Length: 124
Image 1 (cartoon, one colour):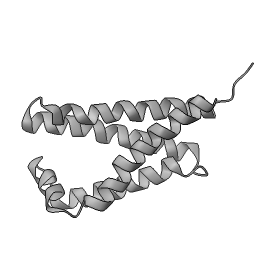
Image 2 (cartoon, one colour):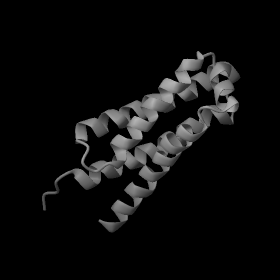
Image 3 (tube, one colour):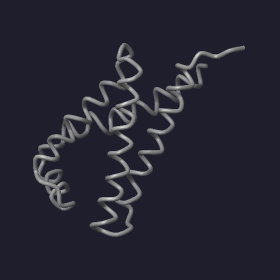
Image 4 (tube, helix red, strand yellow):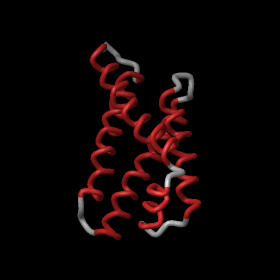
């Protein structure tokens, strides 16, 4: 059980830092804005994305948030990572930028797996 909690909190903390803290601190930079423009999205899309990412991270890390809300947060991050990979592939072809969101998605999938492992009643 301790191992499961450790894996859950390590993976969830990574997602929280990578998808909540970093975007909140860097979304206003010109580099971040240019990244959104490069993929063909309007400038406001970056702001909307950050709001949803920070909201999703809060849903994942606050223990009192209902499970159904956490499920929606996991789903939202899944769509975000998959569409990021598709966007990079469509604009730049198959590069490291294409596969990086999929690597982060794998970490999210581990968090999701251990979330359910820790929150599903066990019958002995």
